[in-house]
Length: 275
Image (cartoon, rainbow, N blue to C red):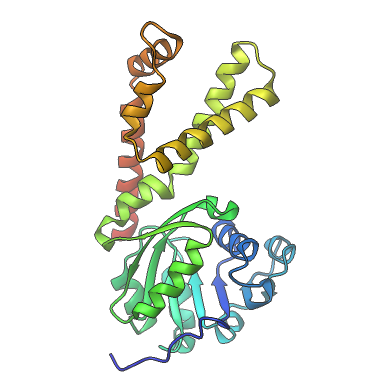
């Protein structure tokens, strides 16, 4: 590939093709973190989603081609079933001067690059906690994406959480874990709160305690560097309350259920990529 013009890292404009929840999560997080002002972000929508983006200052155009024409970095954030048509319709505008990014689950770089007509493409698997600055993202660079391109996207997504690089062949598993994982944890929080209500706590207190407990446990796992099993053992006294609760979780196959959830989501991601 011939040398491409670098993206102006201090002044580039960001466009979203797709105005759904994921695009909103990323855009909100980027604006909140100060990485980009809302005035340098644009998307397109004709319906109710306009208000969601306009509420924090993002410009909303009528058509996707207006977004591409006015953007240096274009993030495709649409459903897997429509991403091909979305890229093909915009292909005449997708020159190598623009850095293309996909956050679409289950769609491989080789297909994205073929549809776009060039390989200055980066695939990212983010998750919705990016909206509150706690996203977990993984990226893989296409053959035409430069190291500087990777740094721009790393800074963009790193400002709304943590980001790692990985080989694209790992992305189905990434989707099953961090992509779909927040939904699993929301179920855990809801179930913990329900248990506390059953044990006598008022709903609001139960939800607050459950959410903070999950947040605190995750912070300990990330910041102490200890194995989760060791952290579990540290709070589990002989004959105490915690081991009684863990016993019930083990009897119900708690670990296996979570493992199966990740594997099932990863399998679905593979199915989408094959279709």
